[in-house]
Amino acid sequence: MSDVLELPFMAADGRIPSSVWERLGDTVSRLPGKRFVITLKEVKRKRSVSQNAYYWGVVIAEITKMFRDHGNYVDGEDVHEFLKLRVAKLSRMIVTPDGEVHKSLGSTTKLSTMEFEVYLERVRAWAAEYGCIIPLPNEQVS
Image (cartoon, rainbow, N blue to C red; front, side, top):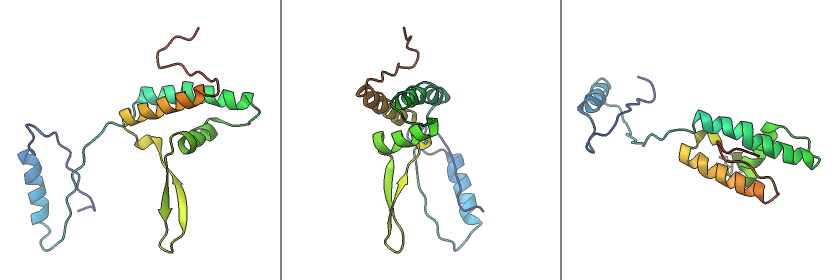
């Protein structure tokens, strides 16, 4: 058995389907004397393809242009990293076993569709403070 057994399912009427219980029981019965931990996690949709296309094609492009207009030589990746750190505050502190503290930058790919929408709204609001108006998805720019 691999380290992790994943049994995705839809809870019908607030119950775990019998097929999931059976699979779990079969797996446990083949490994007598072993210790286990069961974790139940809600599956959330990751950001959508259209959200990603809008982010890179419109949001990142507009902010990259704004930075370049102000004398910065940056590309889309630079802007993306800046936004994650300064606007979304996706960083977190990690302490090594010897007590050294390091900052780790989070990932937008782990955000759900709703979390990514919140991120986009923060980015648009931040950009607007500097006069960079980013159109909403499907908004016609005149």
